[in-house]
Image (cartoon, rainbow, N blue to C red):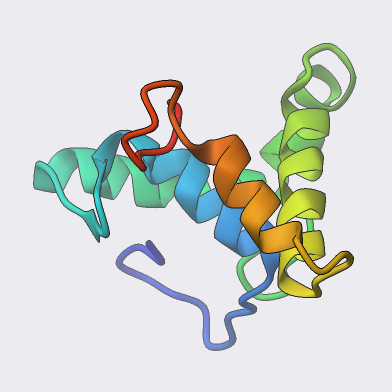
Length: 114
């Protein structure tokens, strides 16, 4: 997910995790990320649009005038990152279970809703 030229320093946090999952969602198959090499390369190339890999903060494109204020993209992204952070820090004892329940498909098959 870092692409062909990863930075010397990479931050792993809720923002980089959400950016990686968001851009690779169509390639997630159970516990694996797999697919055509070109598609995976394009997805990896989009991660820095959402998040700065070195700092873990906002990426350039998501902060531009269109994405930051004219679409819900930035707000949706921030909400997902906040939910993940709450799950990891166990803001409530059942935070992780609540997240997994919310991400389960209506069929109850254990697969996240897409």
